[in-house]
Amino acid sequence: MKTIVVGMGTCGLSAGARVVFEKLEELTDANPDISHLTISGCIGMCYREPLVEIRDDGSRVFYGGVTAESAEKIFESHVLNNERIEDDNLVYIIERDGSTSGSEADFLDLQERIVLRNCGTINPESISDYVESGGYESLKKILFRMSPEEIIQEVKNSGLRGRGGAGFPTGLKWSFAASNEADRKYVVCNADEGDPGAFMDRSVLEGDPHSVLEGMIICARAIGANFGYIYCRAEYPLAIHRLEIALSEARENGYLGKDILGSGFDFDVKIKQGAGAFVCGEETALFASIEGERGMPRIRPPFPAEKGLWQKPTNNNNVETYANIPWIIANGADAYAAFGTEKSPGTKVFALAGKVVHGGLAEVSMGTTIDDLVFRIGGGIKEGREFKAVQMGGPSGGCIPASLKNTPVDFESIPATGAIMGSGGMVVMDDTTCMVEIARFFLDFTQNESCGKCTFCRIGTLRMLEILERLTRGEGIPEDIKKLEQLSIQIKEASLCGLGQTAPNPVQTTIRYYLDEYLAHINDKHCPAGSCLALVEFSIDADKCVGCTICAKNCPVDAISGKVKEPHVIDQEICVKCGKCITSCNFNAVITR
Image (spheres, helix red, strand yellow):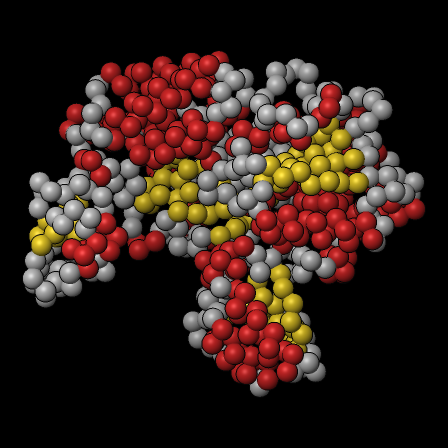
């Protein structure tokens, strides 16, 4: 019997996986003796969704970009007649002997999948799939064969550092919470993934929620906690849905709740939905939100290991950190430390987004270079354009220029560039990206998301934003650069939490590496990337224009004129530089200068 798997993560569903699943459901219902239909989360190839996998006696064949029509052809040929369809839809093959091939083989074969080990492989809504893959064996091991001290020591020996961005040693963090005596302790999972371009945690929760639960239970046993919270943003409905299923199944099978597996250990978990406040990614603001208060950071010390949630000892890690734990316990600290670098062991999941060809999820050993991530795994830059920079660490991160593309991605090398590791978002930019506008975009985000508690964060980021907005309008003055640098230092030094302390990073790194672009905006009133609409002039290339009239029909101020099948022109005095002509033209005839 062949198994048909449809990738039903958010990316797959957005690309049309639902109609593909429904078509295959019709076909499998009509042929119940030869095929079985199931689902999986995202395997990482978001750029080729919807994905359909056919499993047959140990082989796995993936078809990408599947539609309802092509799904029917795949079923008839591959499932009914045992003939693979050799076309552009055939993207990845794992043969029975383990050999691989296909157009997307490099994307997956160059990865080291620990956190993503089950994503795209198991049904995330089935605990039996997780158990068959080795799930909850680590829980059994720590409950009956390891003491809490031995658990913490194993995590310490692995060298695992928090994957939420700060990179604090996980085992050491657990030991602090374990050493503080209290009548109640808590384990918290931070799933409030708010960075633009980041979707690592969401995909793990959608594709392998039990691995996160198992990691939390192991942590609870280690520190002596009996209750936990998963703080997940409400904008992740599918992740929350699958977490609810996982929690219910874990309780039904004795992995969660009272007297887990007859060990005498009690632990349960509740989901808390966040309202989308970026600042609640900071752990003390997150605790306040769980407690029903406004999400605002608290002064530290005391630290959460001493007084966290409801003033009780609390351990907080993010989704990816907990997902590593079952693998470490099962395979040993040395096996995990064999990946990565000496000071940054293990792997890291990255969300590749922006102008990269292969947008999706990639898990690689720490120390892999930016160049390898963007070009070998990511497939390079869309349309063959010039690689300009990557934004790492989200809006609180920084822009790393193409000249530093050989920088290893780890907790030591990335901060040296002025950026931060962050949770794993990597936004790739090409030569059409204006770095002044990028700084403005990210500062606008952090300014809006400031909780307002700190004056420098609340007002200082607003003053910086106002300067950047003037620059993109061509109204900047030479003194603006110095003002931006001074404000950056003051905001970093005077802010209470990580949001304010890192908010100036995009501005500082773009000034550091792209000062010439700032000066062009100030002195020449010119945007070198042709991105700032107030500083560019739109015109139509007569050699490319076919006179289709689409641009004229889309122009909101009737600034475009011309006869059908003849080149059109733009009246510069009327044009408001909205960009509608560029987005509507199918012949790349509209140019900027």
